[in-house]
Image 1: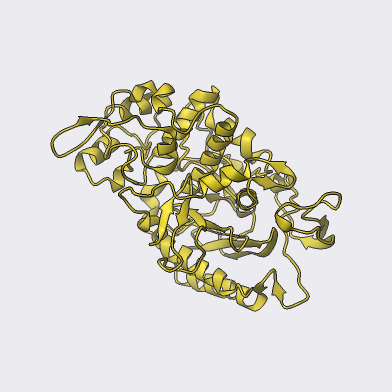
Image 2 (image 1 turned 30 degrees about the horizontal axis):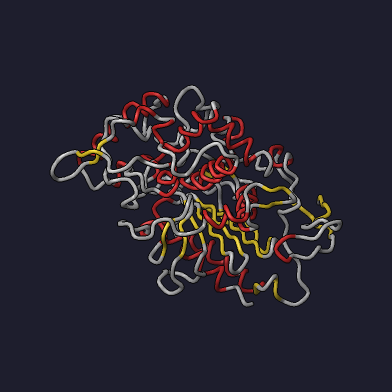
Length: 439
């Protein structure tokens, strides 16, 4: 067995957010694949405790997670899962469950790669906010400043298409209030058909950035900008805006601003065929799998072939994504490096949909509004599961999900590939985690 020394805070300097330097211990690790060796993280370890509680969690109650995950595997909700919980900057739970492949012949690994789908959105939004902090753009800038293809957009109404009452702002893209939609969820049959016919979401075929924006400019908005929250392609559009702003592809922007410095080597936009054996699969019996796979063509580099979907195009591991979550939970700081200011993170995790129509309930359950890239809990008692006012979450359609609870200094995620059972799985897991939190 291999081991390394673990220290969460430097002994030479005080830790931010009231953390004290911890002792150094030698922890055995499982063998890792070559790509994971590139990031020998001092963060991915299992915290130890002498008191029976692990950072306030009951070890015996955390052990329930494995039993329940196996029940979900046996019930064919998904082949397997990776689960991870951190509190006070220590990993208190990290486990793999079940199988990685649809045939249930290959055990799930902590190192398995998952289609992140919409868990791409918080990463791209965080990258955009880094650029806002650097003075590259304002939140109220009209998006047509960089995307002139959208200058003639109208809004669909029962009386016909009408002009925009105000421009679409950068902020509207980050909070899904631009008036865009997802074709499969659109209330308007006309808009839904146009999204499909013009290949806006690249569901089955590649489409270049230029063609996508040109086509999008022909489709009316479903709502006036800033008036209604509707889950949409807004972060895809934000990604294309960032490419124009920085004059480089979105993969390089995210890599330079986040995934490289955070040491997230397995969080990428595609996986080469010789590495694709690490990618987790949904069950063949899942009724959503076959159709969804058409839109996730991730075995070759998309750059120059099709536009990079900032709203759903990335893949990654649990360990990688937890590093991003811990940075956000720390108020923009991780392992001595500052990514975002504390006030910017607070701004992102505040409700930006107050007073608007629409609801996040299909994605979050009741009791949530929406910030910038994250849904934000507004009420203690309205949700389907425990949590805290101000906790922030998002999820991916394949079955991945996470949340941050700043009040409890807690971050947790579940990685599965079970699209049909995704809501059931994420709520079940969240109840298990909070059910293990004792103090």
